[in-house]
Length: 197
Image 1 (cartoon, one colour):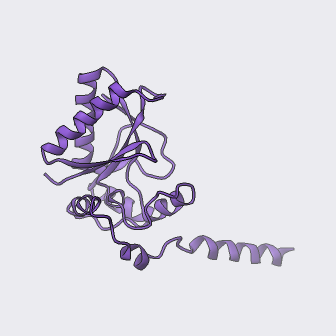
Image 2 (tube, one colour; image 1 turned 90 degrees about the vertical axis):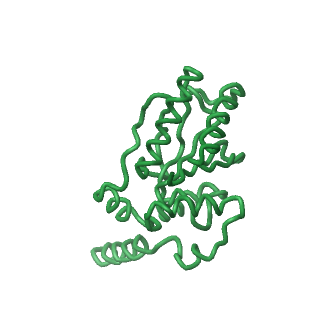
């Protein structure tokens, strides 16, 4: 019985230590033309691709990543299962400014559904979401977040008025040269990558 237990522990430790991605394969995936500016913008913050929790912890310790508040004026952070509540400073500031502008314009708040992801997180997400990128995402550099366009004021329903107001704010920040964004229809969110302005 003891031998069986030791074999199980050995198998589990080997299995657990296996990466669910191959970095060489991940790096070979060519981003779409629409997404290339997002990646280049994210890479400009001087953060290496985040493979694991250890990498995130390193940037937190260096002060490069800052915590995103769960609740702030104009936005709320949903419970995160596949990402971590940290961003590079400029991304967090941009999110907070966008939230303030949204609250001023609408007296409501939007919901942030995803923040920084490691390649390990991306792998876990891919098991439940086939749209999760096989390649690199700007989330993997701590410079991106997703905003739901079907959740406002913690209500899960379409609100075309608030969605249009959110899109106006995204367009405003895009025109200032501060963000890139893309509407992800299958995930019902705007993927926002902050630029180094």
